Length: 545
Image 1 (tube, helix red, strand yellow):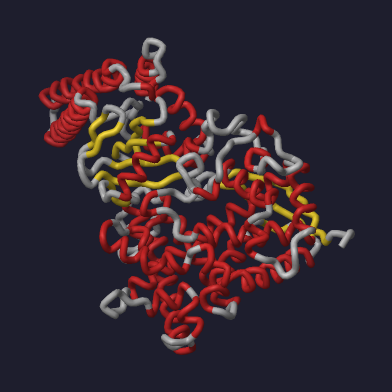
Image 2 (cartoon, helix red, strand yellow):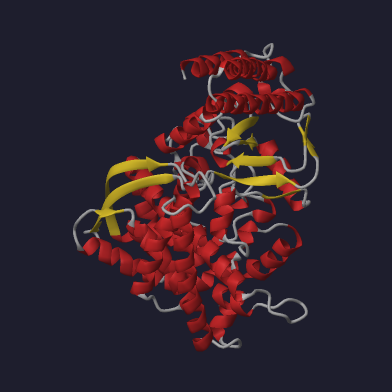
């Protein structure tokens, strides 16, 4: 281990030398600095081969000879891998980036994820290599992208069908074969056309009254105890919002069952194997998935009994459109299994991401009393009942929401895979190359966001607002969802529930600051599979109301 670590540090030192004063992202870096790692590792593996051959020849037993032979064969296989990677570097098919030694690098990656070092690791990589670099990920090599030009290139290729979705195998299994999040190409476009109209901003306003009612009920319940609540309650809240919007009446028993199974299901996202060995995270996650699908099966059956195809709820809810939606030939779009996979995906998309969004917003407001005060004053002036257009145009509310998402995007990034050979920044990427676009890199760009590591909602305020500060103006409109603010992804796989997510966070933020004073304690950061803050909070009704 000491030798491995020493070699790793030596490789990093050489690879991170300035390239004659040029920033790594300005042009393809010098080949030599990228090849050093593979040369050193090839020498090391060659020594293993020589040692294993000598040991096998000196072995006194067949077992010892077999073990040494296997070690030698493994080292030869590793040499072949290093030679292949070195050739890719020379042929400009692999950008710079330290890949590390097997096993050690996987342990280091898991440690980085669990210890909260992702942002620091990405910042170091960007400083050393630019916004396009290679990175080892669970035995494979991914291309990480984080610059505006990189994301624009990737999302445009997505629209041209030159890339396709590429979740890690365990996540693809947990989402299911019929989920829109797992699709690419013609079928994906067909599903999007079916679902997009019912997630459009104008259509989502149909859910405002049920969202507001559910939110007021939950806020009253959280405040009535007079005690601190865990932010875990936001997960139940998110499920209730989706359930009320999709199925109507909220069934508390069903909500609790879904919540418990979702926690187990989500644990499968950090599984290190896709083999369903009893007791492993992926096995438990898939069992939880089966239980969730059984619950959804009963809910869909009940929905169909209570809401025939021509009923209002069937025509005006996403659940109705998933069940009864038809193509241009008047054929049903989805099988029952496909419907369940997509409902599961929609619940997942809004369950933990909503929880993380709310908790992070309350944390940042608690750390920035001026923002909390400004938001409370603005919320107090909102009409009753709440109006979607007024919420959409509330400057402080939206500035706080967008800045909280910038500081702590609930999803760190996503994956694409090259469907054809494509070129970018002097590199040519083969079919099958996996790209990991990083939202964390994009939202921490100091050229776009001055003092990017500090919460400052003024960077998103309009010029005419009294709290506007010219020096903090980012000149970025988050609602456009461009590559300078890619919180909801981009390309053909941009988040379907974007408008729904914005509305539910606006409603809760408006209601909670309009009616309550907020205390926050014991904040703890979490990074994977969702990024955000875990907090304890207490609500006290405002005495001035």
